[in-house]
Image (tube, rainbow, N blue to C red; front, side, top):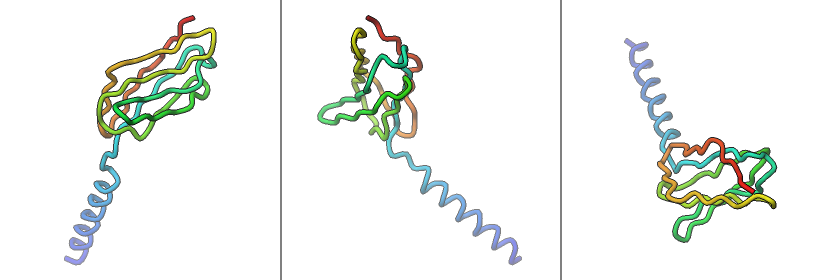
Length: 105
């Protein structure tokens, strides 16, 4: 009987801990820029909120991002053009991944 009570409380603690750390506090936006050295920063803009992340080795990850709709801007280096991605939807606990973003000259 004692082992059953111990097992029950261990399960309760495990579930409580999982839920406490599993609560979503925003999502993230990520992607890879081609060519890798063609851009410096990625921005996520909505209303008065502006978030940015450096682009390192062609990849970026903006986090944490509140749920909502954003415009994402990739700051390109010359001779490439900036990229604007409108209406990017972010959901709590999810990654919005653009995959590869090819820069144009």
